[in-house]
Length: 124
Length: 94
Length: 151
Image (cartoon, rainbow over all chains, first blue to last red; front, side, top):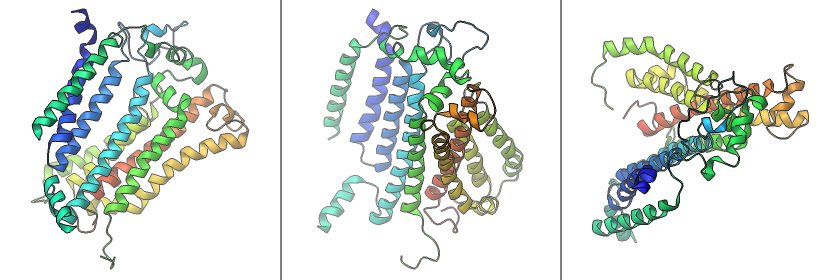
């Protein structure tokens, strides 16, 4: 029971990750795969942010009037900084993936991955 | 086909949950993520950078080089979108 | 997005709200030192105000006020500001992106000048993110042909 109370946040985010992973490998439409990739990346970002929490601590914006600053009273700012970079990378890959999908549609007139593989096999 | 995908997803989920039994508890102040360099950033951020916001001072002052790389990443994504998609009206080369 | 008719209420409300949204974006960028915010967050809000212009009105209405050439130049200008601040620190004698040496140009404290250096680079990052948001949105929704309007 103590393991469930101590680790249930990790398990929730792993469940979200597996939903996104299933959408990436099992759906046939290309846009649904990209949506699955987005869900997967969001779950990873939330997972890292949940490791930064400390009990009875507040946000990492320091109050200037104190003399001695106790680091146990403020949550860890490092995962937040790294996840800002991860969010920007998420937006960039989403934009480039959508541009590639639009060029594929213009060339093959379909968005189904099985039909695209059939057209490529017949062309050879 | 989708049945194989479901089995692979459940196996991956089980391996990941088995590996979290080794990680520190939620809300533990002595976890290794908050022990080595992070207390130094919180303690010294006002006397070295005059910025009460610890996240901005780490992002733009202590780790400013990573933020330069990240700005280049998003700039490259916009350039790729322009290169792939943009068609001008008086372009005769199809 | 094929437009059927022009809605008067949405156009009037957007005409009032868009300068206020841009003012709020500048506030978020400038107060990155004292409250949650910073360059990326303020740049996204500023880009969203231009996207609201395209959604409520036509695409040519926005391009008459903010052309595509200015947008692409701003996109590169933001990264240039960031890199040039670092080179300026090398020319004054310290390492790359060490803002403590800007003391020789700007006459303040050796600690307060670091806060000024982060403000300059956050402005550069905000300008770049704004231009990237507008550029990716225009290219993705009109399939590359901006003059034909929204497809």
